[in-house]
Amino acid sequence: MHALDILGDPVRRRILELLAAGECGAGAISDAVRQEYPISHPAVSHHLRVLRENGFATVRAEGTRRLYAVDSAGMRQADEWLERFRHLWQTRLDALDTEIARGKRERRS
Image (cartoon, rainbow, N blue to C red; front, side, top):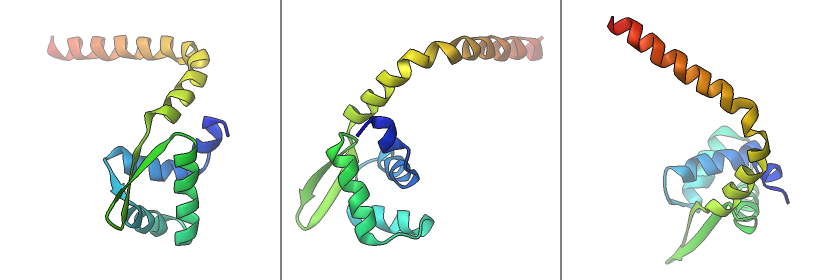
């Protein structure tokens, strides 16, 4: 599966957002996701497996708990794909940065 196919699913994106804050147990992930999406525990487990098998998440056992964390390998694949388009918005972001700096200088004057 391509990295953007993985990231295209809103449930998987939400799981990654949760994991970005730090390592999280499978139960806590499932509870948080199920508050926002009408899916079952097994469906959340499936999404976690897809993330794990495609390099977006790692899992480690701690007793009976399964703790998940972000794996940067999948994100690197997405970033590498986006790199060929970055020039399309980088110039605009640089111009925005210049305008913000100009506005700050004018307010100080």
